[in-house]
Length: 141
Image (cartoon, rainbow, N blue to C red; front, top):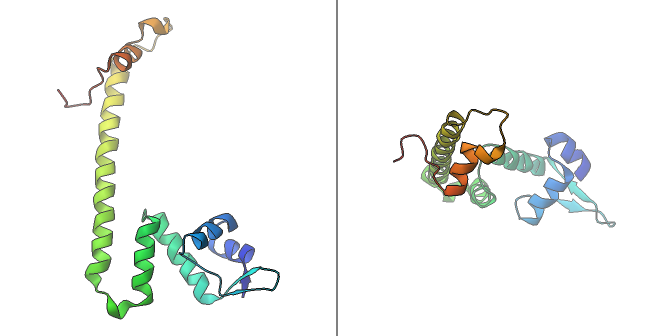
């Protein structure tokens, strides 16, 4: 059995993060001492590592909760249940990539329109475009 500090060292998650995950029902200690110390067994370690991996690839806490439910009772779920959650996350990531590309194009246009010289910012084309709401992304009319 590991204490929370040992679990943190083993998983690379901070004790604070582990407590946060516990508060949100994603992990739990298998046992507690009379003094209230959390103790984790091998199954708890694997669960914490599962949560860490899922968070690292962008799943939300809600998504992870659903995935953990499936993990606990795989016979009552299908692969489709897992792929639906994963597909939804991929759709979110692709939408975010689109937003970032839009922002990238807009920022590039702003930089291309400005000399960036030593003159006062009262004549800055970037400031003017932001103040006048005239910022347009690449390809937008």
